[in-house]
Image (tube, rainbow, N blue to C red; front, side, top):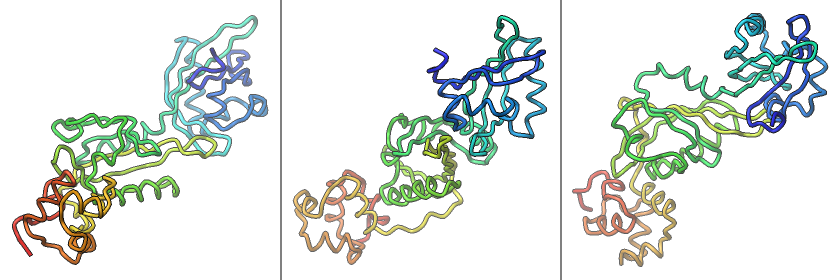
Length: 300
């Protein structure tokens, strides 16, 4: 149970009531800090796993365990590669034959701490976690009545809630974020139940101790005063067709519009088609005319 528990667990020997050496560690603990074996831990004192600025505070917390039996705290640990990780740690006394042990159960809260550091931002409406495949793993809403309360976003790809013309840009931002390891921000439009809203997103990548990607944390904010890049109807049409997997020939068949006319619409040579043409194309793609053409009343 100890060795294969999902939570990171480490058992530390106590001598005269003070931590002396690592006694045992489960697979989750070793993976969290990037060690291959418990034998690597025998070479240094348990307190060296704390970030230097937290060591004095954690010594006091360890001393409190003798009085309260269990202490729950937050701290920062140092991985083998010298990167740091924010954790929640539960420390408990475990009696032994001669000396006692300190059992530490540890959970990685790096993403939660990053999100919490942004909760005072004005116009924040939500936060959560997104997988490498851009599937929403978890979402929390802070303002009622937004698109976050209209549908269940979890376990669904973000492209299902994004305006088609922004999908390519968003995918690029997430790729850059994961590759560079830096926070990215961008403006985009959500599209839920035919309602379009402008949003600002902050995304931050998080990694495992071995450097492999874990997931993104994100912050979602209102963007009323932020300018969106101008996107023409040709690009909108291209993205809608790409997102729905509809080829030019298929759109010809679905609408009865000639391939030549559709090609001109898609490459921007026709920006203001006749109302009848707009209606046929929009219906075939399952969107409103205004999702492609900003002005639905002008004709060419």
